[in-house]
Length: 275
Image 1 (cartoon, rainbow, N blue to C red):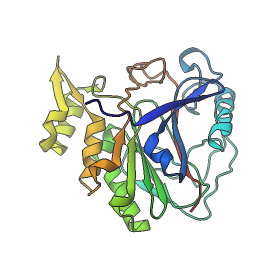
Image 2: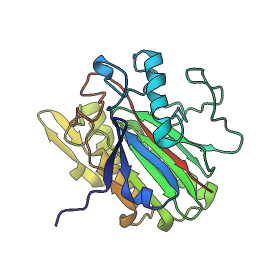
Image 3: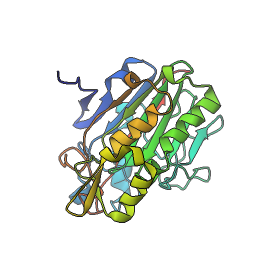
Image 4: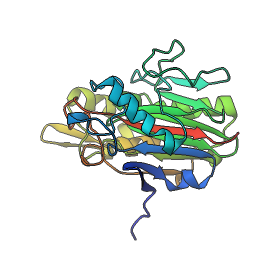
């Protein structure tokens, strides 16, 4: 029996984005993972490039982000300054959400995950292969957004985020939903021995997720992160994944690896509609 698809791809004004059915059904959030379609950029950044530091014209990136205001109700902007680690930032009262685009934020925290219980405050992180993970605590309510690169996956950044939600909000994993958004799949995430050895050492019991072919090790970041989530006591029914590879689907997504670093960025964004 074929597993039901966990997501839908919506489209408006030529822009398309991925939405998870279960997250949308809660009525608690607006959320999405953008594709590369519907923007103004050209060349390797064609067309909805949202990456401020990608090398694209900054004015085009600003205008691309503004196009999303009509879709999400706000213009996505950085919630954290990524460091490819496992630190989690708790966004609390007093956090600014209206700084002008392109102006460095003095309060921008270096981290790879962010959580909040504040309604109307958007969480946005930008991607071109790394694994985005959406989290909703339906009871609190509270939300989280995780950037799990390979280093963050080895460091269990999603587990650190779960611990932060338990600590800050008393989150019960029975009430939490997790969605693993489009990112590089095991088909395309092939690494050399130096990186592979870190996965093998850290996840000895999950060697089935690391397959070596032609002197490269293919690693399943989706499933490793899913198992890390389950290891925190999250029911299996509460975890969904898109299983959409950013490197394979060149018409839909930018990919840092496929495009050899010269490429755009997609946004994963989520906001609580009410507390």
